[in-house]
Image 1 (cartoon, helix red, strand yellow):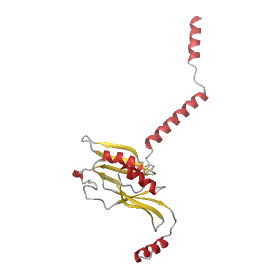
Image 2 (cartoon, helix red, strand yellow; image 1 turned 90 degrees about the horizontal axis):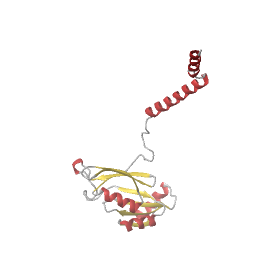
Image 3 (cartoon, one colour; image 1 turned 120 degrees about the horizontal axis):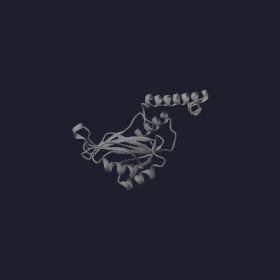
Image 4 (tube, helix red, strand yellow; image 1 turned 180 degrees about the horizontal axis):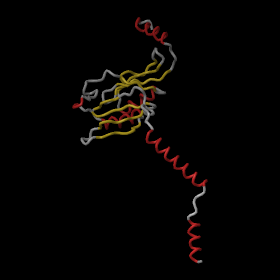
Length: 196
């Protein structure tokens, strides 16, 4: 009699789960499996968020110093850097406003030379700002040289140019007037003829 009671208790413990409970467990497993599959097969965006179609890449003589300078002069934010065993920075990315620009130390063995080594750069970089004069003043106090003072230009911008200590020229401008290409051409012609 006692043995029958024990058997009954064991049977009670091994009572199969309800259909509702079993269905819930199956559903949970499917959701987890589906999420895992989705994560493992999800392709990254071909163009990372915040990256524009065209991105400047500068080679400089002192990348570490350049990063510190661009942070101070332009308010750029360093995203990351990759440093080699020889101490040179092989790649770094900085954000300036809504744009990213890249830089590295010079690597002559790979043909990567900076503007100073090349006697200057024919490429000029353009920065759109809210206040040209204020931005230039801050950059000059950080160590840039004014190559063209800020001036109201015929194409509708107040613009100026500065050169950084690494040999690169930066145009600084803020729009002050909306000018059509036709009107720009007209004004440019007057400048050429010396009638403006």
